[in-house]
Each structure stands twice: as C-alpha cells, then as structure tokens.
Length: 70
Image (cartoon, rainbow, N blue to C red; front, side):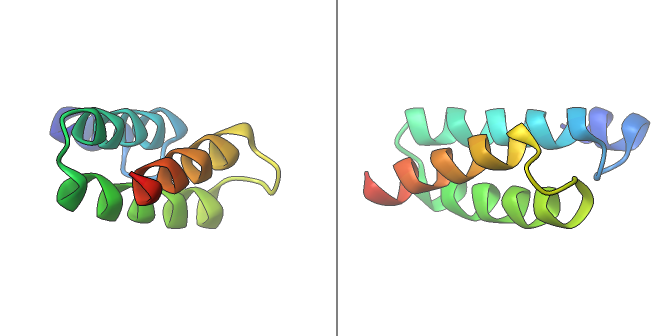
C-alpha cells in the first residue's frame, strides 16, 4: 500500500481499489477493527475524488455494509 500511494498518490483509483482490497483482507481475517475504518476512509475518498456513480463507490459501500453486519 505504501508504495502504491507513493507512486500513484492516495487519491488514484488504483490506490483506492487496493485500499478496498486490503480492508477486505482484514475483514476476511476477522480484523473488523482495521477493516471498517479503512473501508470508511476509502469510501469517503472515493466519494470525494471519483465521479458520482463510479462503480468503485458501490463496491466499497457494499463491502463496508458487509463488514458492519459481520
């Protein structure tokens, strides 16, 4: 993650997608204390930098909802 953020920047769509995937890995490992805040941060950043209706926004929203309902 650190390298991707350094090379592409924290707001790049690929970085946001990678952050979503990392949060998903935390969720899968049962680490909701790390997963949920990372999903929340990623969603906020997606909504801030991506156009409305961008598919990544819906993906991150769904993943956040799944993590919260676990």
